[in-house]
Amino acid sequence: MKYIEVDSFKNLPIIKLASLDDFVNLIAEYSPKHLFTKVESSDNEKAEAEKTDFFSRTKGLINSVAGGGTKTEFYFVEDNTVYAVSGNGYKNLEDYNKGVAAKFQSGDEYYASLDGGYANYEEYKESLSDGFSNKEEFEKAKNTGFIGGVAKLNAAKMAGDLKDAYYSKVKNIKKDGDLYRYARKSGYESFVEFKEAIFAGYVGKNVEEYRTAQQSGFGDAQAYEAAKDGNFENPTDFQAASSLNIDSKAIYDRYKQLEEIRHANSYGFLDQANIYELLKNLDSGKLISFGKLSERLKESQSSVKSKIPSNTKDWLNVKITKLMKVNSLPEWYTTSFKTSEELKAFVINDEHVQKLGEYDQNSDVFIRN
Image 1 (cartoon, helix red, strand yellow):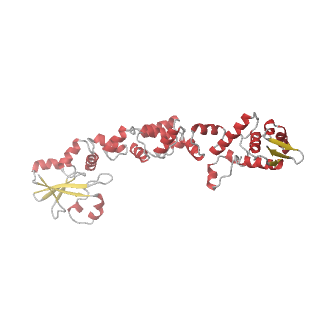
Image 2 (cartoon, rainbow, N blue to C red):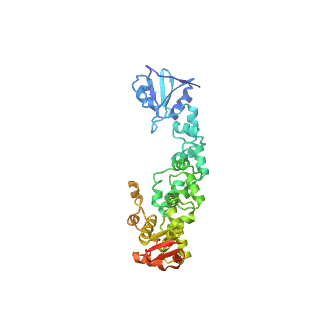
Image 3 (cartoon, rainbow, N blue to C red):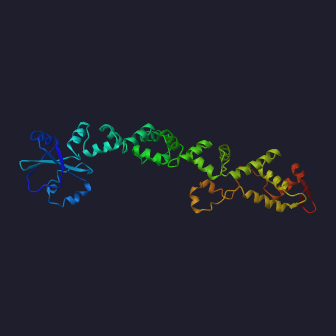
């Protein structure tokens, strides 16, 4: 039997059949030599509706699969009568028979499965319901653990293992195919790595940043971002600084400098170490009054105080507790001098300071050796 694609029939009576099976049975009965076909895309439907040819009169027969795909019709002529039926999206009866045998619901599904490389309807529907458009993508996702990934993340959220703030970034992803493409776009090669990244807060971030953070020994994304903002390169330093509520590597280094002096001289407070450092750094023969020394101490202390954010929008990212301590000395910077007299007494009486120079009672200044 030969297939002939035509544009229209005119002036012939039409018998519209309800099913392709009935049409196939009539073909077996009449054995026509020619089977006529018509194929059109759904976007041509409106234009075709204006025509008065055969397909205008039989447009109700043309494939009406939900969503509107390829529209096809088969028909043959016998005794000057047209026998017509909707092709349900199939281009020929051979494909129709194969599609029915494979349990496809329409020609659109059948051809889509062929284009996607699927072996059967079940495989095609499983892939489609999971958000995949072809078998190759589905197989890659399956081999890398993404099938069932959405359900696993949802379960982790319900169990309290995945923080709400992290889950909120992926909660709108409902299909494994979308999750797979989302992860691949960021460079993740497996669901295991992607899941670990999400649990650590690296949602929507490039995989290289996550891997760098892991290799560097930093913890979750929040810690890694804070470490970067504070210019920390060593996680041990960052953790030690964080325990002191220090968020800057420069300030942490300053803390260590003063702490080393405090420990070496058995001082009880860091402001004592600070004074010792200021006097030690005076050039030989130089002198300084107690008033000037007090000013330099305040200048030195200002470098470790919390600062007001220079950018207005950055205020939104600063904790209230930190804002309340703006321009205040941090807790780690311990102090002992409440008055200028206490400062003077320390300079005059401390044995370590006495080794650096001497106090001149006449001019009330300290002279560096």
